[in-house]
Length: 220
Image 1 (tube, helix red, strand yellow):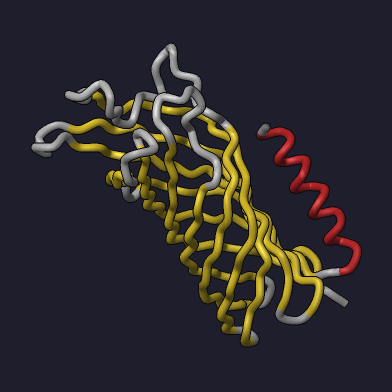
Image 2: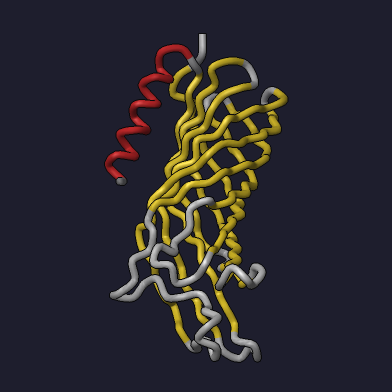
């Protein structure tokens, strides 16, 4: 998956060299995730705590095919997950999911050397590792399941990630270099559960990042 992702990045970069301004660089920051689930169809969504202050980092390619409009492709490593407490909030279960995530976003900006950006588009990825950080309690009612484990020997989580991402940010251009600060929110349509142990689950993620980009091709 990693090899295929980098090949895809190179293909996009080669296409970009034909007719557009292109910059490549690195991106890093922190992510905050959220999760909710329905244990069975007759029960409303149950919200659980997401994991906080997890590192996100990766590569970024920014490609402008005309003034103020372009696309951005990222290959990044991000951690999501949940923390679920018992009714007395004295015990908790925590699971973390490490993903290779690839957003492909439309990128619109306003301004010249100082810019305001709006980005939106799909993302997809692959689960690289699921870790059950701790497991301190089980449900008292076997007919109403809680969130199961995902990092144990008998677990078989769904490894495909897909969803939508949108964000906004500001950037400053210094010659061929660009510094970008932004916030992104994403919603997951895929879910880790693949063994029908709970009825449904959904996740979201919030990312605060800074990127450094260097222009490798100037649009004619």
